[in-house]
Length: 312
Length: 262
Image (cartoon, helix red, strand yellow):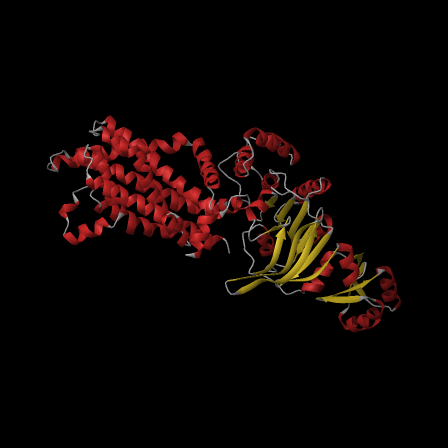
């Protein structure tokens, strides 16, 4: 088996996926380098899940080129799947089995010998802090524990590439932070990580590079900081004034801002210093009902690029 | 057709075996719980129909009704065992437990997964049939050592129903539709394949129709071998089932591939 370490773990060129008369992924190109933590962000239906399903053969591309670990997804998917791990969006553990048996049964799909599988499974249970639960039935686990077990299961074959589809959707903050912490420690082991998410804090914390997708297209790519710098500015001033002063506020603050956005009654102005903007507003004697000075987040970029229209 | 060729090229025996092993591992944990009812079933049938109804029925082909009935019911156990496993149980794994999605992220292909599921369904029907065979032997209803030939043959018989059940499963969208499968397909086979009365009692068109249905042939083989008649009709019927199982084997796999790999 060729295990040459390719520099680009994933290369996609003009990748398109159509099914049921709809274009889920529309001519996208991207590259993921070894050791990166690469995020796919986008609203529901943007094509994130379809894109990652193409990476491991669940969804053959309609056209374009796609290689994973230097292997062609159309011809060498079995070889690809030996060397990657997948954490699915929906929990699909074997509910009739214990925590440990879930890992052992999964190891068997990879042909890992029994003794090695047991040793690896025990290491992984330590890694996800479930060592005390080895013999618990999966049904008795909390949502967060099931997610951790899915992560451990995806690591059973020591994958070079780990794919996570919305890994923390529906979890409480403690459970999310534990998953994040585990993923960050994998980074130190040099595992390449691909994540889809619609949580901006998750993308900011975990990803060093990300693409934002909408309607099957990649609309932008960069590190979280680069995207903030490119589309907005470092700080944001959220302000609401009495209704008949809204126009006055716009007239005064727009010239001093890099960009602005109206969220219902609340106006949001982006600038290198939100304090400066606030000072200007106060000097103009605006009657302020609500004000907030904050850092710009990825969410501002996301909403600016994908709009506020509701997606289902 | 192209899909069938691709399926034949992609399926891997070791992958199929690993999927089978998954189901066996889980089944082993509840083995006695799952298998106990299959011991009681023949008792219930043989007592009520063989002994109870048998009192009112004249001898058939020179044998008691219970002797006539027992090998016929043996044939039905492979049908029921394999059918339940590849319809309800496989559907639950596919749609509710999402087991197939989990396994497809490993080196196993969809061909391996469905191939393993079909073989597992065949195994379930086979286990039921073996137990039934042991029970009727204990009742002294197995009259000849030719019945030993059933030990390999019952697996092939069970395989055919596993293949047919999985084909139906690949086509249905809702678990409620399995009621149609059992009411309109399995139950008529159960009643009109010569288990309860000789098929010769039916009009000739019905006998012709029966020849084209699977359980009819399985009943012929089971009854003849249990009674020690190793004749031409045993050979023809056994071949009929074996050939059909082989021809149809890749069909549910191709259908499932179309359904799940989009």
